[in-house]
Length: 543
Image (tube, rainbow, N blue to C red; front, side):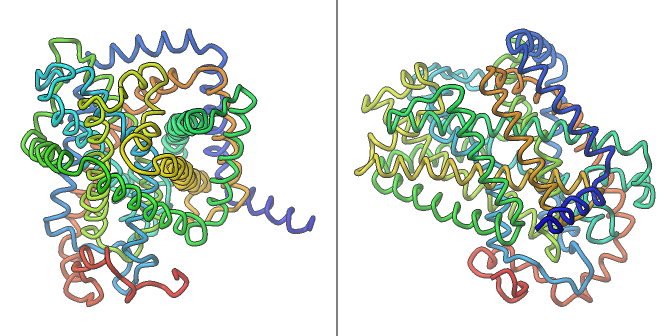
């Protein structure tokens, strides 16, 4: 037994890049500890910086995200979409359905569960300056859902995909290391990625990534505790918060330690079944006609107003609304982009660019849009018809609790489905954090696709402990502001990825065109058919 433990530690020591691992961990611990020890002062300072950022540089976030969307749409319909991640004969490691489930669970799922019933309700209660719709009026209903589409639709996944495709291309076609600094490969070459001056980017990505994960974990732990209190009257103090966070940390750490096939993939598939089940239940037993009517108008508005919504600054009012919502979201998604990009590279071997972009843009939107229509629309219906005053509940108890009274008020056996909703909160949290801690482990090793168990566990424990510290100290709000600041450099990284990919793919076009016609396994029809079944090209151990 002692020998096995020594072997695990030896594997961990041998694989890590000590500068990136230690530097990233120490800077992260220092930053979060400073916030936790002085939460009020940190919040005041960071809020002041964020207000300055909204006014002066908010346009950077908006343009970076808009260009990412435009580039991904081009990849989806243009000639580069047929490029395969891997050698011509490589076959996919995972079925297309599993790829979609893992992408969805890793990327946005915890946020969907947290904000799904509440965001449209909040916009309805406060009004949206772009549309000039007054708060709590019928005109505000479709606009409220429309804005949730903007914040959770094509845009966030475009940021993830730009970084993920850049890393995946060089990892699977040119044997580059699987780490964030690989985005420099178009400019400095794969052979120079081990240069010492490149390491600071990987260290910075560790700090940004852990900050983003801690915010997400903090939100969902808050929602989980709110659910316990609302459903079962269970109130916990600081010790209880610590114990719950530790318990969740054990869950996602075990999943990450089991790896992609035995842990992340299986829980992700379970999540999708439970997610779809709850979605259908609320749609069937809830205000179905109202949801179809409001959702149709919101979707039409999203398509028609996408450009103006994406680039709207509300400059006349110092960007306060846009800064608090759209800019925050874009910064949050930017902070996740390196981790999700690494995770994309881990699961996309054998897939084409078009298949991956289709899954990321169309597939995830096809899952998230109905969720916001059904959950957000049901909240709006319950509020506007006077069935239950969810705005008062959100104001008094926080937006994290809104989903639980919603289930109880609109469907039979509501308490049972509220418990299932609480389970979904838990399992989506596990898959989001285990995939991101796996990514952290990969890019602190120097690029190993299968990092050691000790490495994965160490990041899981660190994220859990730091989140507990923030929740107990009241520093979560300050960290949220800190993440907005850290998202700024990623906006420039995304622009760098777009430029680098255009240069690389245009130079390589003759070779890529030859591969397109020689590789008979490269069948882009799988983008649609793969949602139902894609077993022909899947390795046996994916079963």
